[in-house]
Length: 156
Image (cartoon, rainbow, N blue to C red):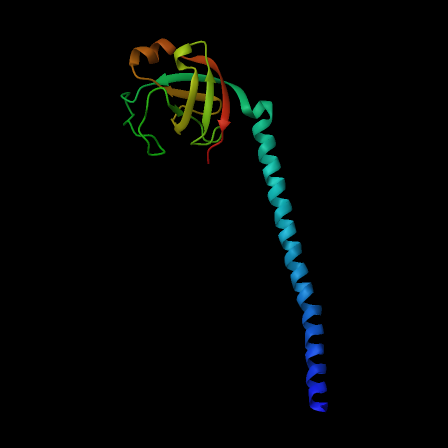
């Protein structure tokens, strides 16, 4: 009987020690998890604000046009896709991330619509974009214009 009480006593002490130290470890992990969740929520909030702020989402850009057949263009974009007229947009990736989907509004109606930021260009810096079109005549006719560009979905 005495032996059973000693074993029971030792087990109770071990359980108390385990709960004492185990809970601090668990609460430390809970604290870290809570901190991670807060940081993630804050990051998402900052990203949502960046996309929803007017000056980040809708901007005036200078646009020019090019064809997949122009000198220096091999028909493959920097992202590896085929350069497709009325879809492919060359951008400065510091301003518009590659793979972004944008909505362009222009006084040149046939080029207004949705485009994908799939390419870059040597002269494409800052708020300047280059639209891929199907013919050199259309590119020359478009010239250089001021357009409105809205980032619909940010790429990576």
